[in-house]
Image 1 (cartoon, rainbow, N blue to C red):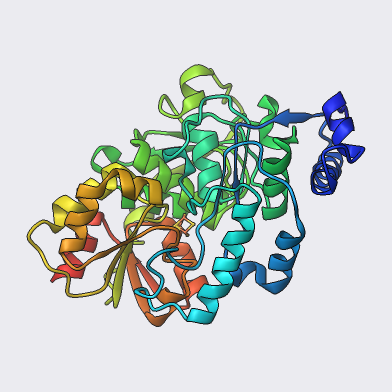
Image 2 (cartoon, rainbow, N blue to C red):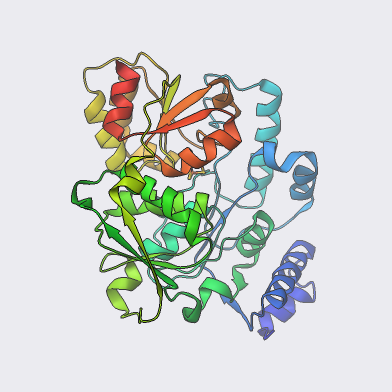
Length: 387
Ligand code: F3S
């Protein structure tokens, strides 16, 4: 792999032991995947932030590192809101260990935003190279924004944050970003909700696997694209997709679709996922809510009182910048939490069935929270929580 003089300096240990080890990790990864060089990144998003996932050994490893991030870097959602964990019923022992993990990352210069939507916090532009970890964030960055990131593991994203570079392979290269199959949606999707697009992603992810699909016949807005990509990355391993005339590269590049497999999706493939099972709690914000989604929830909750627990999840920075909507939501008795989510928080395991508007949660809640999952529109979620 081609290394520049600064890389050589780091490998010689001139910028400290941690940075040397981190670059060695990136170079080893690059060699495995045939990268010819490292590429500078604009930002990093680091997974492995929940104590539940990394445990004592992960925490010991983080504590042994001594360097500072050289690019903006945030964390993936953790098991609890940093400031309101008692209110969510989190065990104090777990909270203490989770706080130790957060402190270890803070010492490494990682910003204490724990979110799967870093694109709402930091400017991320077409063509930027990134080292992001969380699958829905990776999908959004690649597809909606047209930035370039592989789906990093926790250590490789952290190494990239501390070095400022990542190996240039996979989705960093234009040749790997071309469509590999076409999905024709034969349905009137003009009135589809975010949940419908989540359901489309849930359905299509199962047969797309890790290929790059090119959708025709839909015109999703950014929140609907977020839902589509998140669900496809959950039931499949889709890290990049294109939507004709809508997603970033599709607007700039004329892809040759001749000879590609074509799969058709019809309304019934989506509608069959909307089953009306009874639910104990409602949770919205998977991926974390946008300002527009918070405003919509506030509007739907106006003048109402929740009768079932209603959780709303968003990035701390988004919550702070949309205070009026958040206050209005909480007036109903619903809770708006930062830093965590319905899937990673142990607090959600107390419910046997959870409703949301997310195709990703439909896939993950049964496996990771042990309960049943139901999908419905945001309006349905609010109706179920307040009736
Ligand atoms: Fe984000 Fe948690 Fe869903 S990380 S995409 S809110 S499972």
